[in-house]
Length: 190
Image (cartoon, rainbow, N blue to C red; front, top):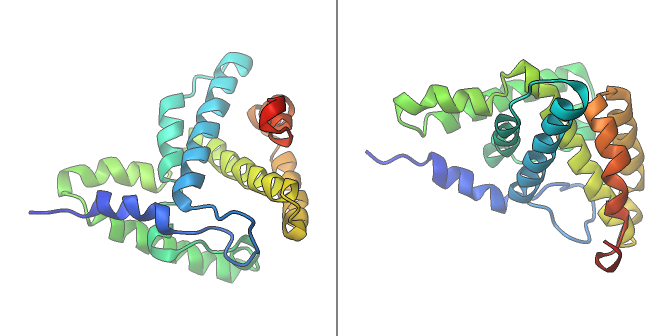
């Protein structure tokens, strides 16, 4: 029998993010997921080294890779639409759950539970790190667009920065203070 899970995951490169906004450079779901994985991994290591946590940093990275896998089927739902009200959010969560199950059905039965654990982000200990890594990745996109002269992302940058600060996650605060400023620099000054 042939299974299409990995062929579907490979299609992340065709899913564009930020569909309602004018972009100077398109960002694919594939690119975003890789960046979330890198940041989630860093946040876990920061937690371990600076705050005495015992996060599994490798697992945080893998959770980051799959955190938006449902978007292969659903596309990227813009944040202002998704979080407009509780009813829309609940309906979209049901759509996400259905999309995740559809993806999982494209695996052999003996692998489904392993991937269900990754795709549905059931890991409470790491879930908050992946969520804030997702927000940091969005903030980086906003910074890059602003630096390119695109004012379309200015309000999104302010709102995203505020959500990260309000999350008050120590690992994210360290990343924001020590690593985020470099995203303002040019290649020559890095």
